[in-house]
Length: 492
Image (cartoon, rainbow, N blue to C red; front, side):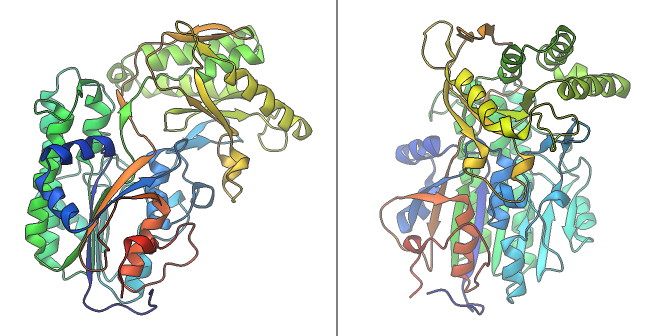
């Protein structure tokens, strides 16, 4: 049923409730709290969508756009290790390989409007327009809105206001009022722009991302108790449902509509203990342990606003000390952007000052995995780690060697710390700046022409959305890691 020429007459509208939790959405649908979304569901289909739990939401969005896995597009997290300098370096849109699926759709003759898709490569010379990093939950660069055509930036900023500035969810909120108001403001900005662009452009494909739910989930999840009114997270989902209603009204009849979130949200019991445990396993020199623990204390005990206020030389000194410490260790932790810990081996021939010989890598990874799998909760004795995942068992693409060697899947429950006979007892630091973090489970509600109504679907992958949208519009999206979800479609 997939055509290779544009399918005339069908139009597709995609609205993302970024970072919203599928379990809460379903509970609220059951209570009648999301009437607009429920109306779509009554005509269409619910599907549960999955992405890799070890990887960050950066990887999920880049995979959504390109249809490629992280070892192909190269963006497993927003930062990764530089094996020459041992620095943790920030990645940007320009570092992502692959072409967004809306580029293929535009090249096939369709007009497209793409608004605020985060952490993805952008299209170029589109038939239509794309805007990025305006009110998405985290910009590629603060103060840099991007657009194709470029003049769209000045037009949007002049009419609807500037970009939102810094990451919206770094600080755990103690008073819900300010972050709730800020998130509502973001949602209203996104709504105004979406309605404007629906009227201004006769597009066949419209994608708009509402990033405010992402902000609410990270910052206010500790205040979330359920779907009842008065819960700030659930209340914001009600707001998003109203925003969706206004978008559908502005769009008018005749659209195939998909509302979705690539990833979910749940309690986050960090900070991560991975690096402290690796220091003990590795029996690092006293000077290295002291330096690394000073960096850890700096990150977890000094409030982020105070750290941001200090002169740049303080930050440069802290980073240089951490980089030097990594170069002297056989293994160390690297960031993942997920609820998992990341372990990187200091490998000869890969890292500049590698200490572990390639022929010893398998045994080293086995040793580290066994050490982490043996950890238990200090109070309950229950396993503290649910799995240790070796990256090369799943990812072998051109960017796999820039990922961690192991992902540690921590049990997600409150805990004072962990212990084992080999490592001893290690206690957690105070709670991190985020109370909510992403789960691998996303969700999708689809309705309209080309969508088959029926029972709930499971097993969709984030890589599948692009090829499936292409099929709805009669365009084959080539060379992806996903598939056309035929069971969702009725293209006859």
